[in-house]
Length: 191
Image 1 (cartoon, rainbow, N blue to C red):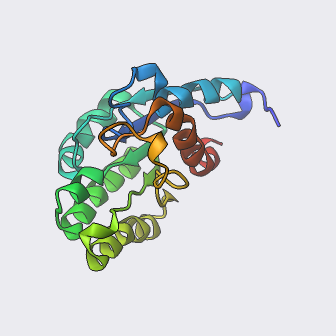
Image 2: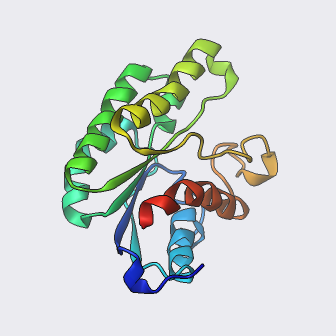
């Protein structure tokens, strides 16, 4: 169903993530955030996507720069997709939780609707760590009443052909799949 532009709120959608959202190893226009802009246009939604993702970013870095990002972009919706680098470095889930909470609270104070995008760690990090890590996103979404996509790489994490040679970063062919995962959780926030 297509609604006229006046039926949609419009504004800025801020993508606030790490290399998985910054189109690492790809041309910027091949990344899922750029594909999101095309989807919004196709759907007749008057939003502009701004991608403030930084390769290598941790939740600590994200928390440190959130005020500046919110002031610069004034998003109506923010997609927070951080934590993968915290996990790869084995940082404590409690530290990640505190940093993500700062980002969510600052975003909500700025009147932005929040989509929290989760990540999961491979089993070689140990059952206790991987479970605590994944639970951080669920707990924060519940506590702050945000939308949640539990796992950005859902449906593709075990498909080697969808990853670059480093086995960490999705290929261009994987970007539409990432977009579909994000879109399902994001669309209700755009009305």
